[in-house]
Length: 313
Image 1 (cartoon, one colour):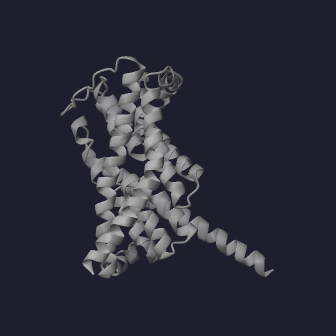
Image 2: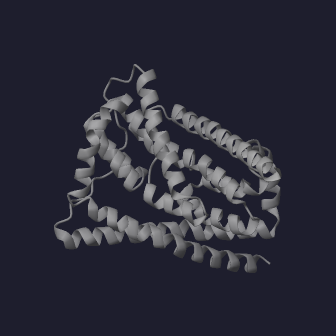
Image 3: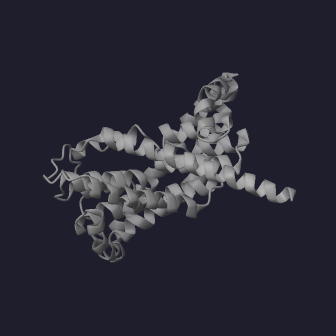
């Protein structure tokens, strides 16, 4: 029984890695190459004038662009290379917690049937609104941020050959890292399914998912994204949507929650070296995700009731 579970889980993990790798590899390669062309500097130059509206200096555009095009680690590396105030670092951290790795994670959302424009609108909207609100309500944080651990700087590649090689290495590493997480995870999930443990977990999570306006069969999808993240939890989410019969409405609402708040452990802890309060960061993400999801679920339900009444007339 255990051997069969491991075998089936491995097959599902390999298929999922292949499916997601087709997104991660080319996107990572292209963005790494763009860093050494005039494209990203041009994007930063265009964005800089809008930074003041968000309470940020023009230089803060660098981590925002890197974080949104690549991932949180790239955004944090950008922050560590700049002299920013505590308030600026906190604003950028909150923005990046809502909006990062847009290309890959939005691509993942489409794999489970969620419209890409919905994900982009929610994530970018939350990032911008949060920055404006924090800038208006927080008067402090004017002192320079004192960074903790600073990662070693990569040497600048010499010529297009080295740039391409670096891009291929990073893209390949991204897929390998994905496989090392997804395949064991899918094996564990398969064992849990065969042992009927997921049914127990689903029942345990059902009050929370129902409170957010979703059916209890969405609990696996929600838990995977909340704990593991959109990119790495995608394997579980894709499989759950297929096997659990999660409706388009529920998966959309679940992703609206998850794009606001996912990978809560990792995405919170990695901000500690920036010298900012991470507990308020986590609370902002959780509260925003819960309120936004409740509003969307309420509006969706009202629209369904309205359409039902029109159909009976």
